[in-house]
Image (cartoon, rainbow, N blue to C red; front, top):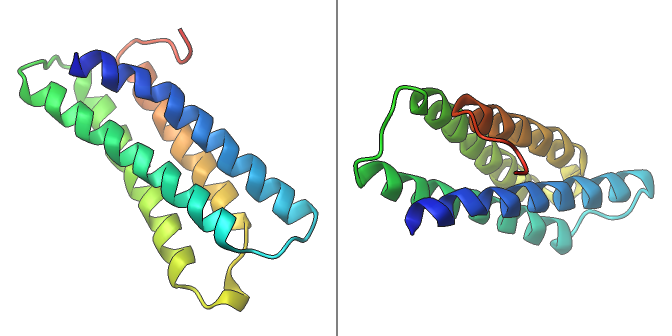
Length: 127
């Protein structure tokens, strides 16, 4: 059950990542004011990453381990650290220094790590 939940959450991670990138790109292009909606989307994305990692740890501790999992684990930890770094840094910046660009760059990096991590265990991204 946990394996299927963990595996299925990749779609939510990918979807939320695209939502964050889309909202941040729109805000950047329209020169919109950075505000609460961006912070909320970033928090949701980071939370979905955290939940996926938690489910992955449960799967790991149930005894499911094989050599390719090493690359997967490293990439997922890196992705989660980047997501937390972007969210945390932007939350702590003064309002006049908050911009959409770190969300675009950071979320693209997170999604690249997620895709690499999924591929490390020989799974398809969307299938």
